[in-house]
Image 1: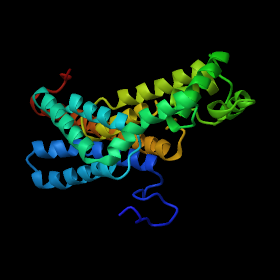
Image 2: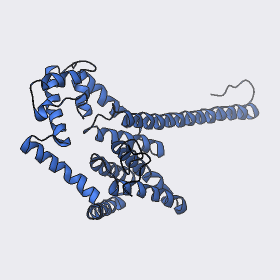
Image 3: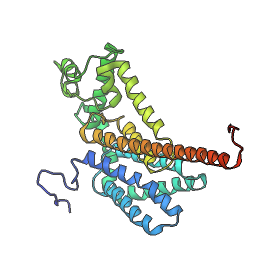
Image 4: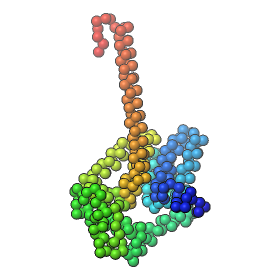
Length: 300
């Protein structure tokens, strides 16, 4: 029902903020559910796995048939591939790839929404290249080209916090078409950081991403949750500045914070149990010696 919206100001089919934030949220939920679904199936708890599987399918169906951010065409396949590569045995992994390719092909032929979103990328690029027409894809390329120039001007320390809008305004003077467009966000996380803080900022950014990925190397739900939040943010930040955008930024903060906090708590609890066992063993040794060893001989 394309006209069914809670308020007239909302886009049809988008109850969550906007279509970009909704797509990122739905994709994350759909892929995160893959871990508990797989674990429940392995344990033979099919009745618990089926509702989660249905929920994941609903999220993916919404992306396919209702509304889709084009960046999801990149990060959803990568997220699914990461799950298969890290969690599925090789005997299932290759079969899962073939099945996903079959589903993707079926979805392509069944969904005009998916076809339109994918075809629009090439259409916009050709329009911007041929007639200098202002399109979303053309604007991104223009933002990236100008941002690279800004980085070359100050490659080590950048131009300073909040300087992006000023720089774009400066080079837009006297321009027309795409060249006259200005923005405070170049739609790429690395370029956004590099323009403001140069190489030093990029080192900090990638150190954070790598550090968080290394934190989530273990097995279990929370390592998987944290890992896939970082993967989605890293990939989507190729085409957006998602650490600096409100909803994607908070998804990262809450997802990584929740997963890391639970992992640290579990490690502390495990360390506490290990310490308790050590103390119990020591007390047992002392009790044994007090009962069986003659007085005056100290246990080693």
